[in-house]
Length: 367
Image (cartoon, rainbow, N blue to C red; front, side, top):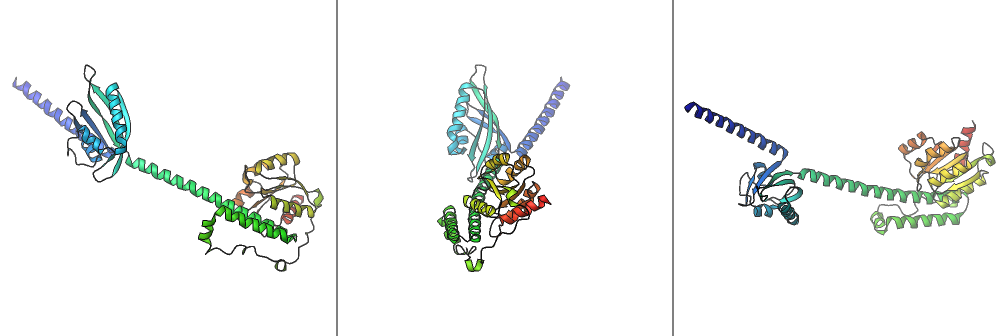
């Protein structure tokens, strides 16, 4: 009998040691995972919290009895109704639940918890306990919020960049049209293009932005200021190196005035402008109809921009020489355009010589 009792005592001690070791392992795992567990006895309103759950709530382990009212007082005021509604529902229907809630620590720090639980009933089906786990997901929530904020900032930057690109493109288009008009000796058109360009730029940028940069920006028109005396007489067209009447040109540019002036210059030099497109999709359709020798293609167009339209244009008409013109002098973009098959990438502006460009690419193809 004595040996039997001693054996039982030894087994009990071994079991207690194993249980203590298991509890220590669980506590360590919970601390590493920032996770705690709870077990609420409904009838007595006593709640058994793990040490880590107390830490999650901002307290020392076992610092207080976590009654339901005490627990609820630590839930964020905006989340209390949702939490009590979930508990009430599972109390009436049984089963389990999952909810994300916020708590407020004693120092005011708001933490985000992912909580799950299950209702335990007695033999009669009456709820007697609610138990489950809580995981502190604050770091993840804050990281997601920061990521979303960064994404929103990036979207805003992209909108601003696109807006700036549109402003720049409109200004360059207008100045290019004015320069071509000046070369044709139409001073009235020059004045009209510059006035309309500046008015459109002011409208897009807004009075506030103009006021902010007014002190640092050059006076309006200073970058394009010119007079007939400074410009000299209108230059005579350079003689083409091949018969221009046999060269068919397609113009694709959404800026009407610049397109008109390029057509006028090309036709004056003897080239046959067979069609004009105002966007990339229309350019693709017209190339299929006319098969031009040369395509003058604006990089920034609606629907399909120049870079998007270029492969399709060359697939439809592989013998066409494509001259891509842009309001931005961008080396990387120039490399991409040339790699895609364009014969030229040229910046719009005072140096734009559409007749000379067409002559060059025609001569290259002929040679």
